[in-house]
Image 1 (cartoon, one colour):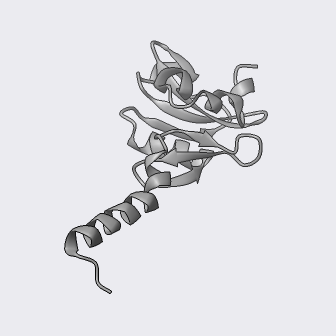
Image 2 (image 1 turned 120 degrees about the horizontal axis):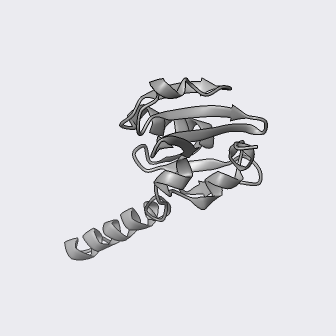
Length: 127
């Protein structure tokens, strides 16, 4: 039995919508698995990534200079507005963003998902 074209097209549209449902429900920078292995949704790539990889992807496209992953801060006089740094704190890494003359957690400036400030090195980055 062959369905008339309008019904076949409608059925295809429903299947397509259902297959993309999970992707459409995510927002860029949304975090899942915070208690275990945190991952963040990368809307540009359409996939979940480990948080550190997500931060590195963001830093590589950010408007400022990326200072890399390091345990110390770069010299203050060399840092510019919107620079980023993946600082290694006692509990892990945390993406930092230089904004209004000081280093801040990137989440405090960019406002992706509040969970970012509760995972890896971000809760203790200022200790």
